[in-house]
Length: 121
Image (cartoon, rainbow, N blue to C red; front, side, top):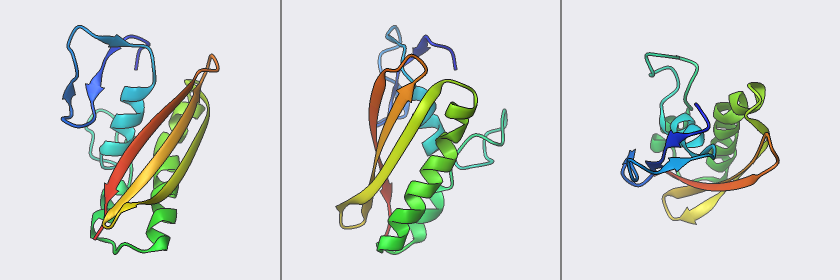
């Protein structure tokens, strides 16, 4: 991802505003969490296992898995130098939903916060 990507809207999975450019890691975070691991033709290492949790019951162990899956999916952002650190917490949002709170410190030290919801049953 370049430093000047077109912003993606997490709610619609479409471009937010086609002429709006971002200088954050929002797109990289979004794509790595939303893409099932191994399904992207250009790079099978991009993605997460979060989609596997859609058939899991709403139990505390699922939140541990969600956090681990998100950390694994986002680790390449640290490995390639785009981020200094990534912190993920997982909590119950509402019944049937896990809320991931993600804090990314990019390579220049800017802290960026993201929220991602995972459906469970």
